[in-house]
Image (cartoon, rainbow, N blue to C red; front, side):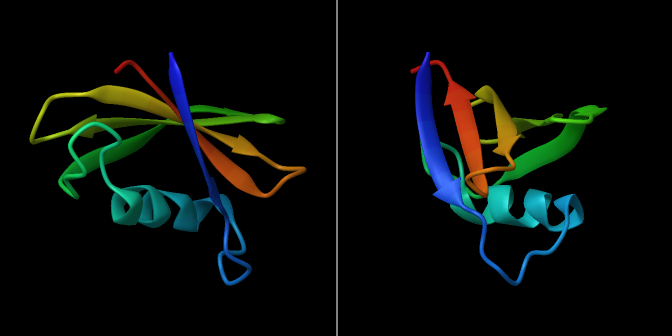
Amino acid sequence: MSFKEIDIPSHVRSYQGYPQLIENEGCPRCNSLMLSVDIKSFKTGNLTFGATCSNCGLFFYVKEDERARKLIFEYEK
């Protein structure tokens, strides 16, 4: 399992802006911006999004790290 982290900018104030951040970052495998993003888990301390790349078919999870204000991408290479 591979990981990639991105910082959550200060102008993004809630989880509702996270899908746009994920789409702008693109697919970790092929860098395509054609992603389909949806919420997989919406529990306190466990906000998780699932994303599927329309180009290469990679499905990956993106989890929120509230303390560090980061989004963590988890994917298979």
